[in-house]
Length: 290
Image 1: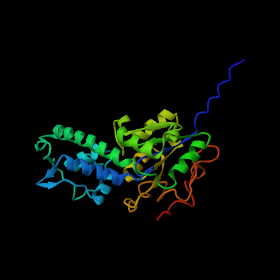
Image 2: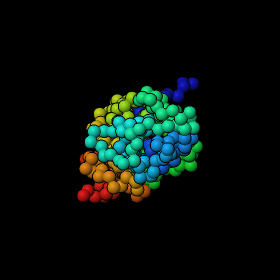
Image 3: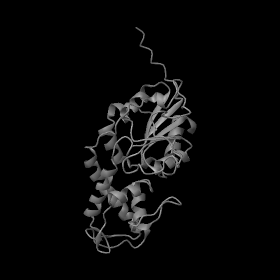
Image 4: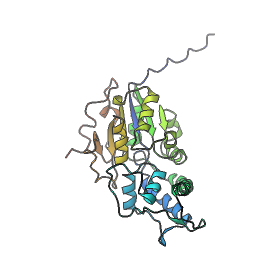
């Protein structure tokens, strides 16, 4: 008997829907903040005798200023690494801390400081992995992802600034292995050398999919992510959080913004039946422009 013929190869995608992870697929910013503070406490971090603690308000500022965990800590302890013209915050320390539970020596230079940051990030990631198993998806986002996966010609991917260790825990807990296996591209922060707001992660995604940037729609939740998408010349939808709703996303170039996808947004609100990006995204669903 003749062996069954293999299924015909699926045609190359005509467009792509790319999701950020933290704050888009899952409400994780608060879990990240708690995990950082657990690491700071474990190391006994102190500046001028006071413990290092990131408040909700300050962490929201960091999340909208600097992409990635190690760059956030470097910025906090040195004031370096924010985009030109970024806002500043009175809580930024601009001095290296004393790790009082780890010998207590204040880093003498940037190299020693970044070695401490590496250790802090490793411990923070372990704390975060424990916390994130309790996380759930943001409203409506998995239904949108499923409708895009089911749509012919639309590639679907996740592009996260998080390190792969923490990122994989989130994705396993929230997206699930079955859905993950259907994605066309998954890129974590370790896979690129330059973090958001640099567009590298989105440029790499487009290259891997063989698409031009004009054929990609990104879903982000922060100014940092929006700037990365726009620097890659992609269309961008923002699902903001209560912490970021005051940001002026439209002034920064967002094509649409809304709190979440709980109204039941499907792929047809972003792409035509032929698989082209619509000229206007989420009409009737997005927040009105000012």
